[in-house]
Image 1 (cartoon, rainbow over the protein chains, first blue to last red):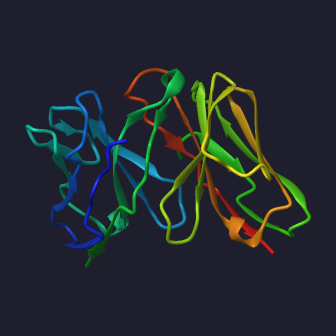
Image 2 (image 1 turned 90 degrees about the vertical axis):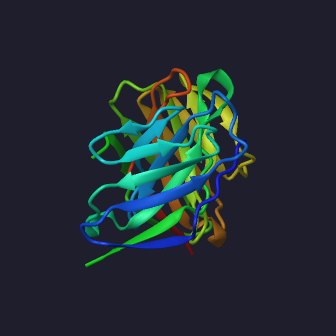
Length: 113
Length: 114
């Protein structure tokens, strides 16, 4: 299973862009990068995922480097409600078409007023 | 609201009790998962069910017994638990196919074993 490395914590000013980095240097060619976040004491929430190309949705943008060894999650205008633990995960193909999301420690993002 | 519900949301039980956690989804998903999240630890995958069949057991002690009667419901039966089993237990579901299976999580059951 490909491992990911993320900074333990980051701060961001409210209204500014939050850029959360992730290293996944052992990623395989068919493995997707997923981002989830977990607000305190709630279940994880899906944010975005991608394989090679950059992706954007209503929540965030995902920038994946050309060699796919790292990626950055961008929250364009962070709000106080974006304070959460953000997990970068490489999806690992399991048996019977079910995948395995291997959660690490994640990055605790603190958005400050 | 992700469409995955879990009951109860909070549970306190003694070490000799038997209790069950319930998870329900009406998203049309065919894969369901149990995760455990202990304090200050990452989520740990416990069990995976795909089309009602267990496809993953991540070396979970037998005092945790999962049951998946259909693709919409998943149970976790608990008996003779230990205090170290106190944790947030999360259920998730996903569509059955391929490498792009986004998992949707329920709100979790906060379990305290006394």
